[in-house]
Length: 356
Image (cartoon, helix red, strand yellow):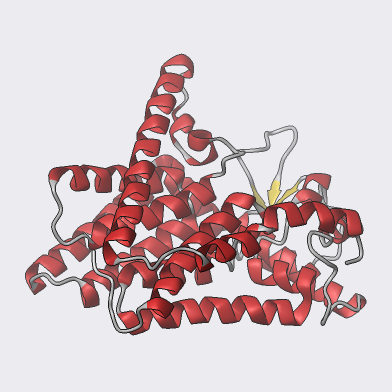
């Protein structure tokens, strides 16, 4: 590492990558019932968690009259982070979706989690979940074709309605669409007539050598810019094989923010891409290990025709394109725990499929 102190501090949250698999080595052989019970408890726990935050948001709404308390980071707080909660809720959501015999309580929990995912308004998670639900009812669900078609139409209609008529969800999708290919559109949500704020397009994020402090990077533009500065770091620094070291890339991101004259707050953002984050900090071989783990995970899920496993694998592969998921301890613990449960089961009992 190029910064021993930063890397040493980061190891504290990354140690789960060592200790959780180590703990699984000493666990007794888990049965189908063990997995079902564990995922069931987790999924109902997420539904209860959602109810708590719905109630909390309702109380805040009556106090402030602000509908924003029901959406995105406002619903679960910035520190807890809407993206992470969306990932956890989605896994619980798919547990209930693939449960073949749903009682009333499972149906209620399913509806609660669907509402939670949409209120959290994570564009990537909503898109991933939509595609996975369509895939499940098209190829995996053991129901009549007429019911499949009706369900797919209902899911598509719900998504379309939410994007078109729920203002907060609509704005998050529209911001990306309206700003992606048009330079310097005015951001009416942040700026005002006296101090205008301009949105950065994808082309500007990739090409501009200098920005202004009143330039705002929408989500996709920010990720394009972060990919660009990673490319610059690869060319300017000798990091291809070794990387900067765990957590040691953040200072380099700050330097790039200063170099390109960004608003200083952008220097605090990580790469927002786990593949790039791993490559920048652990080098090419660290990147290969990550990619190998993800595709091993997908292969096992596909071989077992276990849709919950497939949903987890696909979600992680796509999510890592837009989030540095391992930069927070909760992301590390969630990923490696579910990874060990699903793939450990594959190793212990290769010929026995898990069904809910």
